[in-house]
Length: 461
Image (cartoon, rainbow, N blue to C red; front, side, top):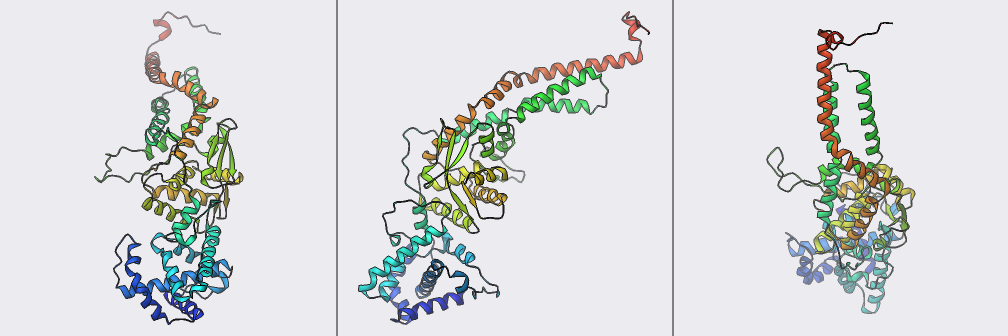
């Protein structure tokens, strides 16, 4: 890889036909401290070595962008090998280029061009480079870019910074917003409590069933029927019944300690029903929006949830992960892009959810399967230890949850839970007492003659 970078830099240097490569590095030495200031960590390299690396990587990136946009990447990089002799695909190079730690400052491009090119041609060259960078961003972005982008590409810090500002708009925060964490915790508690009473009764019934005591069918059959009815009722609202276990895993107290004495790694997930639950239970229709992520909205009257179109291919995960990491390092308030990834992770619990979004033209899947889409967003979600907040998206999520909770099927389930499940403890105690009395009566009658004791006349046919 290093040999190819050096060869690419040499080819580009010969094309300029102005300076020797060493002379170029010497002229770039005056910008050493400016380059170091672009990185958060101290670069433990000598100044001359650092500028050699920057010059080589800068020219290599310029050539790669030119080849990529010329649609010649397959042929021009066919001979590219790594240190072990294996071929490196253009997708692999692209993934490395988009990593946060591999970003090269854009101002270095301008300095190299100002050194190599005469002042008369400098403006045209910078405009050409800006056009290449914009077209490259358009080609690799997983989401739609902002329509009006007033700034030049070279005004940004680096390639990842340019792509981030092309994707993420500045959203106006609503005046009245509710905090995300308490709402999420309350919803989690309500959902987790929905199965506790029924679980108590089921556990006791299973233990009694394992006693191998044959009870009259007139007693056991009604109990089984009642359990089956309420099992079907809870199963008809899968968004509520299946979320209890998920919430117990995802929301843990901060002072919880694991078995090895260390604090466990906490992985939180945004509290919103999955896409299939929203569609099947509440009748929500998912619709693709034509703009960027600022077009996310929920229309309660029409029951439509608008989401931007996202294209996923082999290098989308690297781009999305590094955009999330870059936002976390540079943005202090609303982490809009991170919140968007959390939203997508929240509405996809199974591959069926990813399939639904693909069929609605919200996800353009160029991966192998819908399961890969699910794995992509779940992996990104697991890398975020804490949920972020973006008031614009939080309001939309709150509206979706409110609409789902007020849907007829969910309200019917809650009515059953309130008036029936709340009595399970009393019913369980009474049922247990009755069962033990019947067991005792059956044992007593097997030893003594119950008809003679109770003066019951048996009719013989």
